[in-house]
Image (cartoon, rainbow over all chains, first blue to last red):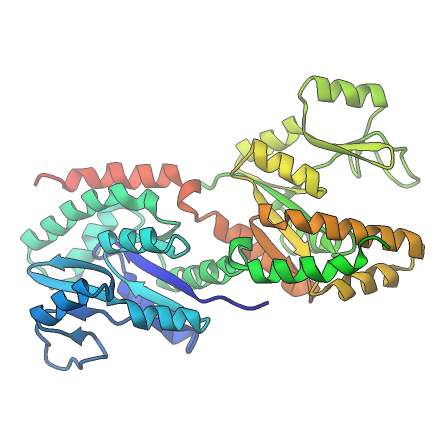
Length: 210
Length: 210
């Protein structure tokens, strides 16, 4: 059974915990998942490294990547653009690897359009109040910014049906293993195993007409 | 998260081990899965009980069930008819339970047509030779019958793409847990959780326009 590589998109509301799920997933299953590194026009922050957190690009370089069709998806927030470099993702998938993109909802839907076989996971909190509590609990945002994020979450929730699976992030350990299980099971889809089906069909032919 | 009941169809080549997977799955996860009991026109064998192995019916009763649209699917083998009673399956699914049907390929495709949300699992051996070895190893069939079954398997393999998932039965314990994992993960599909999505969408509305 040749295991085909997969594009996995993890997104969800701001504060739903997708970053923590990602970090723990990579730690729990080392070498099994590859993280796509985004290109961005935003300024490098202290402690960040080009090619680790992001590929840092000038506006001109970023626009050129768009023009050259080098980005799988891209979107702009607060004047900064973010995008997923196509070549890196496609190379890994062709090598049979699973690549995870942690991106926003608009980008996720762009990816699904381009690669219908991409696996879209939506991380959500158990309730709206739980989402608010987490944003407040972080203590990093003003009440205004939190209110704005919650309003955006409500808008974003209209796109949840475009995803393949829901991950209700109640207990982080459960969510991490749920994401891992979903990806593992998806590898057994008939649509992802046409080579195996073709192989057994040809192999069984020898028993016909005896 | 209200868990919706699911119709799960397990089929595959004769000798692929689907019966053993079923038996072990029910034992490993007691109370979690419900087995659909087929109606049949074949004679009751010694030790069998009506309503346990099968619902034993006369030809007239069986034909009446077909006429009354009481069967989800049915098929005839060696002059005996077998079918899945609809009411029992639908009742369990409506109660949120997972019902497993161990049926032949033609019946499986009938079920998928009627219930597109049914989950179809195809059990296959690692290779054609492995299938032959298992049929021979059973020691219960003549070489002629084995040759006939293998020829049928080749024909049946043309329908594998109509299934949702492949289960390559190499190690029985692995296959049992794979089936369990696939079913568990399927419950997180967005398409199976429209109530949950609806709930969070409505819940988040309160954060809009503040």
